[in-house]
Picture: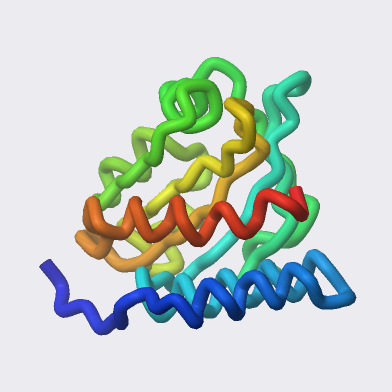
Length: 163
């Protein structure tokens, strides 16, 4: 496992996220606040947020840390895939820690690999039993742990009001 540099999530972090939700100019401020905090407590090299359109079986990117590679408004079809069943239908976290995991789940695996990314953490953003989207973090192979899933679910909850 790679050496990880991160810090513990603190109560004041959650208060800062709540303040970001109350501020004018939403949703960009809460997206950026969650991204920054996720970088500190979980770690990522790429961070995106996708909105899920269940009727079309599509996800649409509404926030990205790499707009040149993964621009906002980019759409992906997610009909009848193992990943979509697991994350969007069953609302379970997907943690892939190897390039093979990513290759098996994503059509754009070559782009992901070209960025030096070999691990991915997809957090379903769920409200009242319905998946509204996903928060996605990517890093070097072997990066993510079970503990990161719990932190991701907590941080992702702050994105629900803007989806």
